[in-house]
Image (cartoon, rainbow, N blue to C red):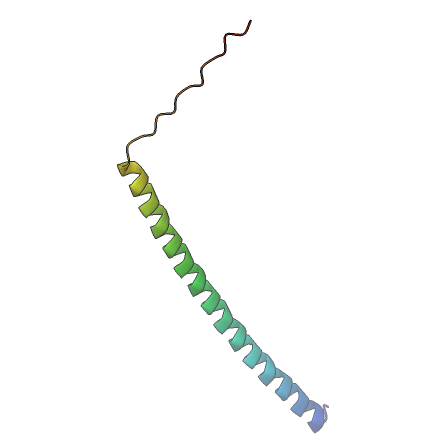
Length: 70
């Protein structure tokens, strides 16, 4: 049979684990939300950039002339 001191230590350890678990879940949710917001912001920037490129006239590059060296 476990001693009362051991039972108290177990209960204390379980309580600490529950607090740590709740803290880890809060951190996970905060990081997930931050990632979602960052992705949303980057997507909006990409779509704006793509729309600006589509509206701009195409750039035509000239081909370099070949030299007439033998």
